Length: 321
Ligand SMILES: Nc1ncnc2c1ncn2[C@@H]1O[C@H](COP(=O)(O)OP(=O)(O)OP(=O)(O)O)[C@@H](O)[C@H]1O
Image 1: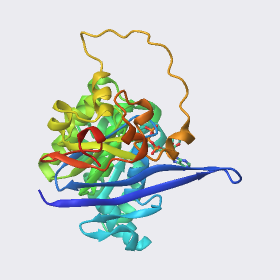
Image 2: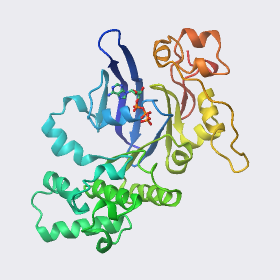
Image 3: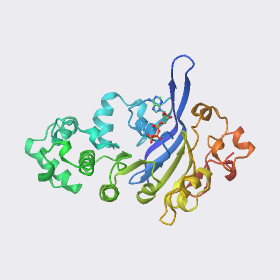
Image 4: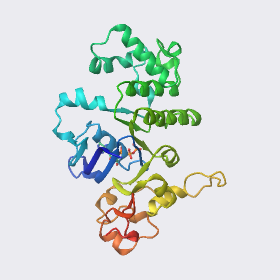
């Protein structure tokens, strides 16, 4: 599979407070690739840095260090004009809350205005109407039922489909879907996920699927990246990561995926985690929570190590030295 996106040693440090403030390494030395037509899930709990990675790729924020290459071109070397005219035609995004993406005072049709102004300024009115109808049909909506409606007259699933229709209208090479199905009910969620898979199969669209939900990641992706506190702890072919998880954090995550045979039970409330301490640890950031932490885990940060073809893990238990 040829490469579309390459992220190299990406780091983003946020500084919190002025005097006596501290640094949050939201993304810390993260490297991975997304192939053409590949669906990659970026999985991790809240605060692991997933959204920050997505924002860096969308160039909404600048990295502290590291590079992002799209088809070999360094994003930092692209001018604002190039980003607007070329990059955003190739890289589109859909976010979590569909309601937040629409102006409640405007008909949903207005959501397409910017796309047409930016990328199809010369199409006629009739062509434009036809393109919107066609895009809506492609995401399983009946144009007659949704056009001319206000956001409050449609469901979250319908609005999210409209946003996906808008993103896919420009036939991007990469779609960043950041918790894009999290707010939908279970059956709509699968429909929307299937839609992403369908687009990949039809048009070769690559997808970076950002989620905290392992089951959804497993369902849709070819490759999986597991993040913990800004770092990648394990990544590789989805089947390998899920069926042969090696990092204690991945194992813990997989054990906590609800299973029909396991009933939820109260296990006490986890104490508040000390954010500051975690970012200052010299070794593995997972060490404070890891049941198998050894001396080395506190002293040095394990690097990603290829344990089998297309399966990497950053753990001292598995040779990451
Ligand atoms: N603009 C910002 N300023 C300061 N800290 C930030 C900023 N954006 C994110 N962070 C911090 O960076 C860390 C990673 O945040 P990020 O939103 O990328 O995580 P996430 O994995 O996407 O979590 P969630 O699923 O809750 O959105 C968090 O500790 C967060 O508080």
